[in-house]
Image 1 (tube, rainbow, N blue to C red):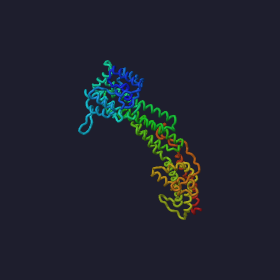
Image 2: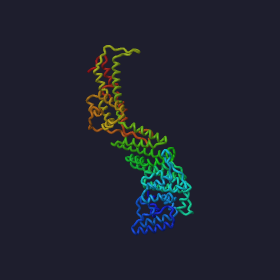
Image 3: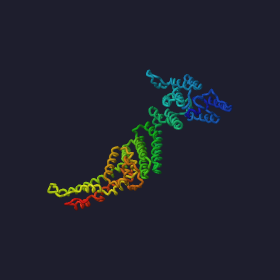
Image 4: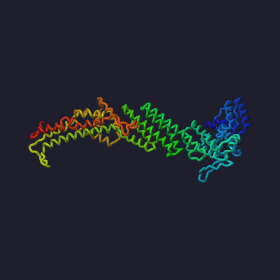
Length: 537
């Protein structure tokens, strides 16, 4: 930690509490060593804590920082203090010899105790151990295997005690006034700044430690930090929004970056104010809404461009990430609706194919019913409520079956199929995971191929992919560019891509209107001409 490695007291080789005379003497001595290109080994710079390269300029700069009371306090909070020579000097000798763990053990025993079950507890701060709390904290901040939790708690215990005034008076003139709260804020702000610059990964733990402690400056420090966190998150939201608006094709990337970059900030904020605090819930919902909007814009843009990328998966991942952040009901409902819409659209090609094939099947069956109805009218008379068979009527059933086979204009049917279920959709239908729908699709295809004349089968054989996986070279007509949106018509909704649902209405006209040899008027004419005789072959 830079606060300790390059501490002004360390650079000049003095302990906190050194007198002005001692400081002057030590600086003069250091300059002589540096000019002789040597380094003293008997001062209090403790080389075991890390390399220290001293120059005359560095020494003079450090000395200047030890002339002003505020600077001296700032430096003293992160260097060793000989507050109790009886106990501290033994630890300092261990540090000089390079035995960091021995020094840590000396101070540790003075400030903690272990019960019969092996659990460690903090001792009260007393006249015998107050400097040990401070020195233990400094050592655990800097040592390689130091404990950040113990370092922070030990320092706060000391800065919360009345003995802290002994520390202050050993550092600055008696006229310098400062409070426990001010000292705590100086300590915490400096430590946070150093962590952010050198060990950013420890910040969440640092905040968690503070959140679990009670001390005078807690609210002041946390309020300042909370506001800073919120400002950081809001800036990241605005950055993502600008990127999304500048290029919807890159909206997914912007959303992913926002989700990732705000994760630690949101966790820190939650650990400070709590999961139910309005400041946390509000900003978390803002992030969730922007991540979702990135998902929506990316999906709609990819669909409009008929992208070959797996944009559904990317959009769904973002929507689910947004769901993990949503707290408010409005945000949750919006995300829920979007996820449901995406689920529906995941296999829209399959649903669209089923819809068209079902309409064709209905049209065929309705045409056949009309034929059967007119045949029945020839076979029976209606007398009151009775149906009486006619005599001397002979039906050419082969002709009837032929009429049924040709009851639809199959050339029109195949055109509709190729437009509503183009070959490229078959690849997506193959990957569909809804086994019930896939089974329904196959059943409809089998029905169609059992009815359509052989001469037309080759036009649509690709839809029967599990039996005849052939690739067609014919180009298909793109579907209409009209689209509808689910829910609101605002840009926050997923849009259905151009599709062939309009074809369902056209297929409905097969009954009679585009029938190829059967249906309403045509069937009536043929059967009417055959009354009293056989149908002609």
